Structures are given as C-alpha cells and as structure tokens.
Length: 325
Image 1 (cartoon, one colour):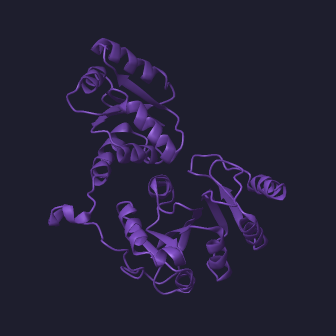
Image 2 (tube, one colour):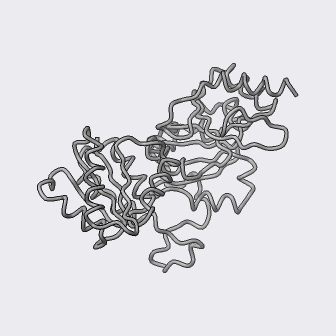
Image 3 (cartoon, one colour):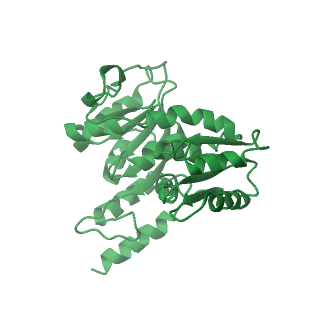
C-alpha cells in the first residue's frame, strides 16, 4: 500500500487528517506532520523522517503538502533524493484531494500514479455556490436535479451498487467514501417528501460528485424505473432512502434490493438511540422486522472502512429501551 504523509504550516495537516477520517473512515499508513511556531526546518525534517519510518510496510510514499515553496515543501524536497522512483509530492492539499488519495490507494500501487490522478480531482472540488457567481464558461453545475431519463443507456436494467438508509441523504460520506468505493453512475434519492422540496432537490444536485448524476424521484417512480428493461443497461445506481419506511415501500413495490446499508437515522422526539448514529421508534423497529421478513440483510456502517455492527443487537437494545418507558 502507498503510505501518505500530510504536512503543513500549523495544525492544518492534523485537522484535515481528522476530517478525512470522519468522511472515509480511519486509515492505516497515514501520518500528519505539522510545522509549528518555534520549530526549525531541521526539526520539521526530523518529524518527516520519523513519519516515513512509522510506515515500514509502505512500499511507496505520497506527500500531500499545503503550499508550494513553503518550509514543509522544501523539507520534503530535501528528502526526495534517491527516492524519486518510490515517492511523490503534491501541493495544494485540500479535503477532496485527501479523500481521492484514500480511494486511489485501493487500486493504485505507486505514489506517482496517484499524484498525477489527484490533480484533476482536487481542482474539481473547487466550486462556487450560487453557481451564477462562476464565469459562464466555468459554470458546469446543473441548477436543478437532472431528469432520470437524460443520457439513457443501453437496453437492460439498473445494477444496484448500494442502497442506503441515511437521514442526511447525500452528504460527504456518501459523495466521497461510498461513491469512490461503489463507483455508481447515478445517485438516486428515493423520497416522496424530497421530490416535492425544490430547495432540497437543488442542494442534492449540487452535492453530486464530479462525473456522477444525482436525481430525486418519488417512490412510485423508482418502482417504475426498476422495472424498465430498455434504458438502463450498464447504469450503476446508488439508492438513498431517508427512512426505513421509504425503503420498505420501494422493496415491496419491486425494487430488487437484497442488502440495505444502514448509515444514519436522526434522533427526534419519541425515539431511543442505542448508538451514536441510529435512533428508532416502534414504527422503525416494526419496519426493520418487515424488511427482515422479506429477506433483506442489513449492513450497519457509516463508511466502507468501518467494521459492520450487529443489527440484531442494535434492534434488541432499542426495543428494550422502548419497552422500559
């Protein structure tokens, strides 16, 4: 695996390491090196050497640096001698760059290969909102959710790469970690409520990662799309449900989901919260039982790198809390 060293002026490297973990999960073979007031360049170089030494299993090292020409960049450059075939440096560190670096390590084995790939992705993460602030030639954002039938494909049905219950719908963990892992061509939010909310629809369209279409459709429309054998061959769909009740309706209607990823269910009045990210009322528990009776499996993870939690244990804990009221 390619090791990654993040280095910056101040605590930026440590902070972006934490941000990356929130979105993509905890990562192995990643080190953060900070250049703080009072540190000398030689101190920084020693810290960089220690960071590399802390990853002995990494065959290749990618340095992600905040600023071209700054002290972190200069000290990394002095360490490069003799390692040009195994090491590479990219400056302008930002969060899209880091997330893409994590994802790229799953398929790329050389730091130089990842470094070249990162340039476009990190630049693509710089966007303006409202979109009319951008010069016309750069304004590639779609102001509204694109039609699901736009750019239809070959004969055939959708391939479903992920179906997720997440009260936050399309947010950072989905737009980066899950999208990089599952490689959908379309992200489809399946919700009657969101389909009637113009503001939320537009925000979802804006949140779509580069190269992936985002759509919002009512549940009945998703059922029809799932039955379409003429237009969606080769299309990889990532489905997002705001509630388990929406997922149940879709599955009962014929959307062929065998496994539901359960990522987030927000707490509200009347719900119990058996862990940090999932909250249930009795209706939710009954709905999950109906889903299980239909043969649906549950994959309880926020991000792909997390170890799956035991859904049966979570539901039993939630039921016990409700029964004790």
